[in-house]
Every structure is written in structure tokens, then in C-alpha cells.
Length: 380
Image (cartoon, rainbow, N blue to C red; front, side, top):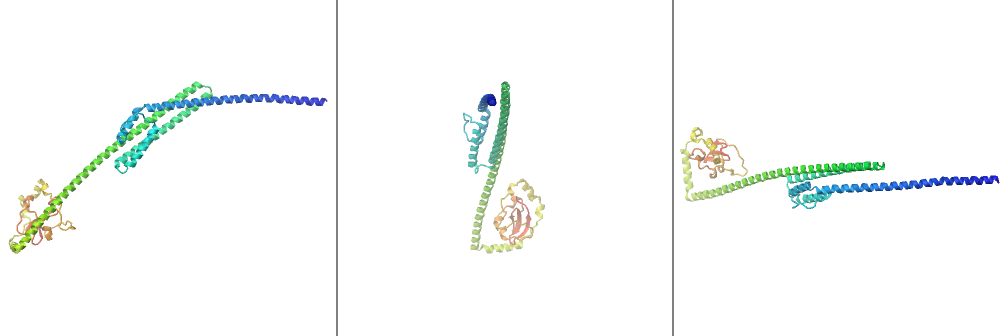
């Protein structure tokens, strides 16, 4: 009996001890759950305040960007003057990403439509412009990334201070972070603007250089075209004169054949061949009367006769010497120098004739074709 009572008492005491141990554990669990909920609410409120501050800062920066119309207006006016795609400045300036996308689409369409028509300096200016815009975009993205890093670092530091209960210090850190982020963004904007201005100046230099080059090329083309036109006129005039002269000579020859003049001329040539004296090459050169070099130096235009047309199409210039025999076509009437004194050459007699051969002047015996006297490089 006593043993049973002892067992019952021990069981009751153990039950009491167990209940006493469970009660404090549940209370502690409830207290820890309440503290976790409070910390979660505080963390959520902190994140909300942070997101709100971040959105406010971004809104302020966007407003500042939109309010700074001077730099953007200058940049757009330069782009308007360079491309001529827009006629007036828009009232409301779009955001930077929108302007960037609009610029890319405009350049793509311009490149597709003007690739075949624009010149080499224009293409080079377009490449320089695109390169400067890409560099400005890289500078802006780099400044944005640095600003984001500064903001994240400041947020982490302010979060640590808030967890320690130093709200004032956290606010100061947040304001300092905002100022530093704004400075970073402004510095990046200034760098991007400098890059774009440098690219615009280089584009302007390339365009001016290309315009000068095009002007010089057009002037040279106009000069060459005028020279070719004048040469063609001179050639047509010479051919017309030669044809007219050949027709007249042919008529005279036919008339002479009909009238029997040919036999008389042959007789005269035989008589002249027996009577004329031999040409003296040195006598007229020693005379001061025939100073053709001084006369040519003072009257250069007279000795410029134009292009020489050989009687044979495939014939090339050969330097002649005294004693050489020419073909009869080279000393035809079309090559005669009818007035030798106009070039300060001596008068000829008998069968001798001054004849032009390219830029040389040749004295030819028209009966035999022998070269009796020659002056090289007489004409220009």
C-alpha cells in the first residue's frame, strides 16, 4: 500500500514538473514570434522608405534633365543643321533613352537611303558622328553604373545605422549619398556632352574639307572639259580646212591634167633642177636677221600650232637628220609653212620647202624628198 502511494506521488510530481517545463517554453516561443513579426514590419517599412526616397531622387534627376534645355537645344540645333531632317525645335524634350533610340532609327534610315548618293567625306563624317555618339552613350552608361554603385553603398550603410537605431546618422548618410550620386551623374553628363561636341567639331572639319576637295575636283574637271572642248574645236577646224584645201588642190590637179599643164610643170621642174643652187645651211644661221630664238622668246603664242596629225595613223615621231629621205605624204601642201618670215626663217627657192614635222621644222627638197636642213623642237 505504501509502495502504491509512493508510486502515485512520484507520477504526479513528474507530471507537475513536465507541465511546469512546457509552460515557459511556449511563452518564450510566443515572445520570439512577436519580435520576429515586429522586425519584419520594421524591415518592410525601411524598404518602403528606401524605395520612396529612391523614386523621389530619380524623379528629381529626371526633372533636372528635362529642365536643362540649353545643352540639349544646342545639340539638337547642330544635328538639325548637319542633317536637315528637322525644321524646328520640339517644344517638349523627350527623355534620354527615347532620344537615343530616335537618333539611332534616324541614322539607320538615312544610311539606307543615302548610302549610294553621298560622297566619301559625307560617309566619313557619318562614321565619326556615330562613333562619337557611341562613346557618349558609353560614358553615360558608365556614370549611371557608378551612380548606382554609390547609391547601393549608401543604402547598405544607412541600413546598418538604422538597425543600430541611429536614424539621424542614417538620414545624413542618405543625403550625402544622394549628393554624391548627383555629382557623379552630372560629371558623366558633362563628359558625354564634351565627347559629342568634340565629335561635332570633327564632323564639321571633315565636311568642310570634303567640300573644298569637291570644289577643287569640280574645277579641275571643268578645266579638263574646257580643254578637251577647245581641242575638239581646233581638230574639227583643222580637218575642215584640210578637206577644203585637198578638194581645191584636187580640182586644180584635175584642171591641170585636162589643160595639159602637167607636162609644162614637169619641164619647169627639170629646168629648175638644173638652175637652182645648193642650199647653204650655215649662211642664214650666222645672220642676225634670222634670230628666231629671240623672236620665239618674245612671241611664244605664234609658235604654238596645236596638235600634229601624221599622214599615217600608226606613225610615231622619229628624230630626223640631214640627208634623210621623207615620204611624199610628209611634205604635202598641208604641212607647208607658207610664210617662213613670220617665224624668222629664211625665204626658200626652187624645189625647197619649209615643212612642219611634229614640233620640228624641216627644209625638204620636194623633188627628191631629201632633208636639207632641220631645226629640232622649233614649235611648242
